[in-house]
Length: 295
Image: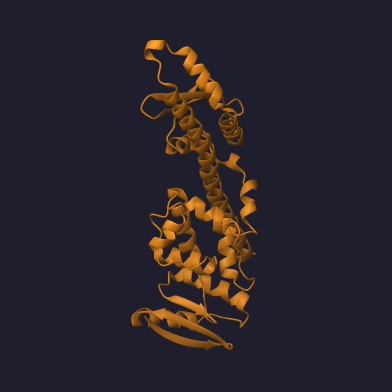
């Protein structure tokens, strides 16, 4: 990879890429009104990368300046998949260097370390990492995605009632459950294993997404495996009765599926609410800029 170094206001700006990319993007960087203040300059360069869809890697005094839009888009894609199957080289480096993760042999080793689970990576790394205050480009990304010890807790305060009930239904179906509406109830059902179809009802009187998710969590927490086993053993005729080990296995599978449903629905709904909030904030900012320009 080729490299050119600029000196602007006493700061080293390195541009890495092919010769053609460097020559084109070098002029763009040279035309920026950089201040010599790293905190301010990193945001200026980050905005420039996004606006011009720059392809080079840019370092400010030896540290990478990360694109905002590209990182956020790739992160959301990983969030929605729930796995690290589509982990790109760029995101691998972002987690390693911007998020201060430990060294791994390669990208495959990284996936194995987190059991190919993006949620595990979030909980073990991104809920607790941090960045120095001068790395304002990274902080802007962290704030948008609500990661790092400073912003991760903000996920609990996201207004999920901004999400429509129709969108919530589609999220529930993404989680592997069927949901049908009857009167003021939603009926949930799922085939769990080869012999078990489990279902439950939730009232939707308020039609608030937060209330529906709270009720799902209640169903999950209140499911008692012992009571279920006793009920099934007593209700099924002896001739068709499964073995006790089969009943216990079924109860364990139901409990796991309910816990997974409660966790996944809340997580996925928060992602949708975050994206809606982000779009609204951008629209408000644009309106404010237009107003100030007209004024």
